[in-house]
Length: 453
Ligand code: ADP
Ligand code: ADP
Ligand code: MG
Image 1 (cartoon, rainbow, N blue to C red):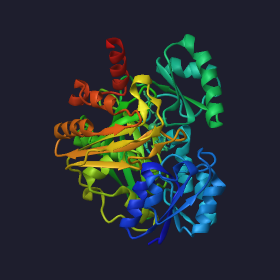
Image 2 (spheres, rainbow, N blue to C red):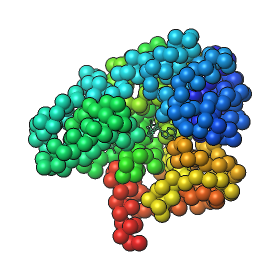
Image 3 (spheres, rainbow, N blue to C red):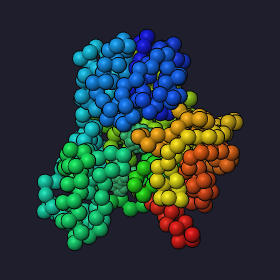
Image 4 (cartoon, protein in one colour):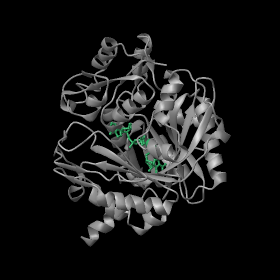
């Protein structure tokens, strides 16, 4: 087993990985920016290295600094967390050339899934249903129009290099299309350095349901069930996730799971990964993309499977074989995650910064909190506003929803604004309580709240 692992990330995921290392008897090396000097991951790690000033480009996204930290600390392997360098082939390549193991899939698998057009092609070859529309990038608005006429409005224009909900634009009519295509292309070029666009049918009122997979470096791939992630803000960012998904029958789970495994095998995938799907009201599912890394919402899968996904990432990177096959994956109970963010619900979810003066999270049976903050911690303006993940687990969904409501009620934070008050209202909405949600739910909820205000 590795003796020393460097974690090329910050925040709660860095803490999560450090714990997994220590439980496996591995030393951890944290990297941190000047703004994060007091972050919990810095104190938790066996050793910590400052890699630059506060902004991401000066620190966590500064390739030379991160690689230097690997070299001077003698790291044998690097866990990239999510975001940052986690899906960047050049990072994995640079580590390989230094003789350091990247804890993730092969460079070719990252490349195959890094571009939404290439990923869609791989899914088609793997006989996995994809959203109707162009498979490759459309060169101009003329071809975009042809596709839109063929599949019918509304359509989505999607940047092949997009991610995190960015680079997706809905077009409802022919009149809008020409202008929308040009702007979307220009925006994608500016944000991602790649203006290539796909045209896709806009699936109406879908659910976002994704399948967690684990593959070892010996060709074995299993899926660990699904996560329901339809509770997203209007910018397609996930807020509340759960496992299992209430509408998935065992048959549909088997079908989606098998499709995800085929896609993974198609690209020679190893390590943890997620195949995202849209599920429509008729129970038809369509491949969206594959995320070649650990995901923010992985804890809900851990809670119902009993597997430690981060430890498995490390063990797989160390060459271990999965000791179970699909029939050995057992799911039990229900788990829900709510993302706690430093955002002001009364100011259109504007990010909030400042010192947390009071931090009283809930802690009782069936409650897990993944976080890097504490009372006295200062939330800086440089990073993602997520400050914690509250995860509850219970025997049934009904009990898990109640446990989440109770846990949110107990959660007391002062000094900065958070989205907790919003989450309390959201998880009491009848649609949420009954599980009758689509990706449009939060948008509707916010609109209703605005009209009643
Ligand atoms: P996931 O795909 O894991 O569910 P999201 O879709 O919410 O996560 O995140 C979108 C993108 O932003 C991903 O690339 C993810 O890695 C990144 N990201 C999300 N939250 C954070 C965070 N707190 N810090 C850094 N990157 C993040
Ligand atoms: P990202 O890389 O930004 O995560 P995804 O392709 O995973 O992009 O899509 C993000 C979200 O956008 C989905 O969870 C879903 O809510 C919405 N979405 C994407 N494609 C479609 C589609 N064809 N029809 C309807 N909604 C879609
Ligand atoms: Mg996605």
